[in-house]
Image (tube, rainbow over all chains, first blue to last red; front, side, top):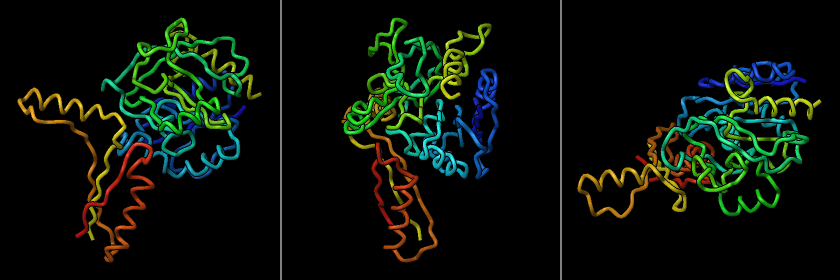
Length: 227
Length: 80
């Protein structure tokens, strides 16, 4: 299975994602933002970081970079595109997934482990995954998911919510919402579910000696689903 | 020709920075503030000299990059 990770100026989780994808069996290629052609891929990942120094709005400059034309075409033709953290911010700025990510409600940069509950397994990202709850890491300043009421209705009608912030028992309540996101949303799909944007970093949870291994569960399941 | 544009958050979007600035001002003794909303201001020098066309050009920039219309409004506030 082939994957591509796009590196923008200011990306800093691109290498971690490369390590994670290779560890679980992807043949990954790193792609520079100024390239115009995407290598043949089964999965394209927009990694975390601070692309273009978060100038203007997080992800806004990266969403207009050269490689993104190819990424958008790939996504619109059904290709799997996953955006993590800053990658999620880039996805919302392209309009590939609905909504925006505002500054965290309490104006703090949040860097901690959180639990998320998988809301929809009827897609290539979470199909067949045994767990309902994953412990993942978040590190962001702008992860407060927001959308209009009309968009929220559409998102819910199409079952586009991928994961919600919760506690270890899977309760989705305000007190377990780290950043003020509407409905505790931590990740969403596009309507067709081939594009996933999420704030948590599964690539940071792939080594028992460093962290938990819930990221490993995600990646192992993902590659099995793509095969 | 120089065009100025301001980008502001839509009224139903939470503006935590504005709130904190409001609280700081309140602490400094400015007790007569109802609300503060923070925005962005752009001065754009374009090659176009026709005011109508220049304004249209900047409007297009606002729609495509400078503002995110899900949460922000833009307003062209002056040409010179």
